[in-house]
Length: 148
Image 1: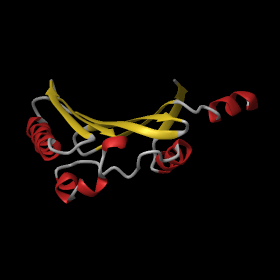
Image 2: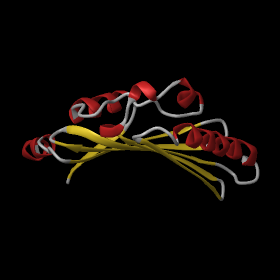
Image 3: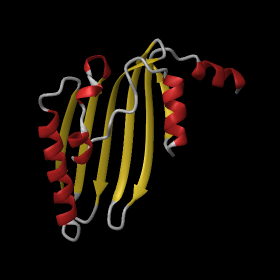
């Protein structure tokens, strides 16, 4: 077992997948953060928040989440290194934010991005993956690291 843990700790290139499940008053929320890393340094993040509710009863709340996502999509369309993809289907709203850290200028990511529901990139290009994993675990996520 110790040898297995050692091998996992020694992964230099691959993905770190972190997930967390929460609930609001009406919706089930699933958070997925998928980091790509090379030489133990992060290069990309795909951050997805899925909100699942009753497509009739929670329609207004889900539509508002989708509207917020569309606003966010508009906010980032001129920013390099960030893409936002929104979908609302059958009572499931999904907000996917894709960060390409090598091309992301965090000084251009302003308060409007956060106000529109964006997750401000708290990590930077080439941050150490082990430190990122530690922060995610501290934030209540469950993480799994796999090699490339």
